[in-house]
Image 1 (cartoon, helix red, strand yellow):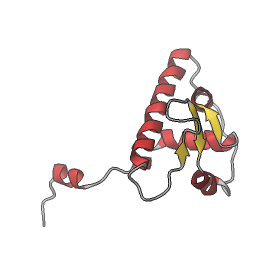
Image 2 (cartoon, helix red, strand yellow):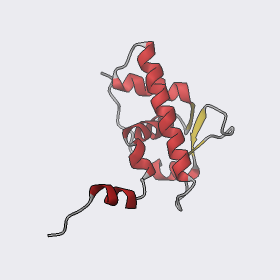
Image 3 (tube, helix red, strand yellow):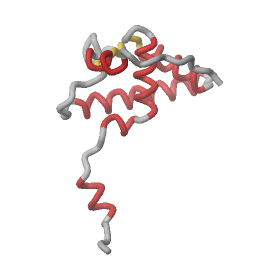
Image 4 (cartoon, rainbow, N blue to C red):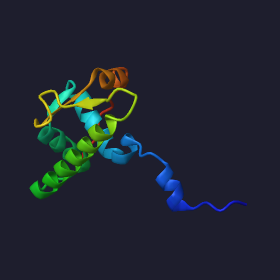
Length: 119
């Protein structure tokens, strides 16, 4: 039976941008989709915080930073992919407005939006 060297195996694999952010990116996509495809990042964070039951300002700000990091990591990784990105910043890289691309809208267009409960 062959022995697998974990470090060598991991180095040989390319990171998957969507898996890197996982639930954070899913929440960003969901928030944007539920609000017409574009929102300010603080509104995305407020909505995700509500879904997760976070109430205090420090918790919401920490979540906003996590979401921002996941969004930026996704955009950085999306540049090297052959598939079109799902997210972009419509007013440029210094803006805090996030939006779905046409590919993102197409992916989510026929998705049923169940009611999300808050905790």
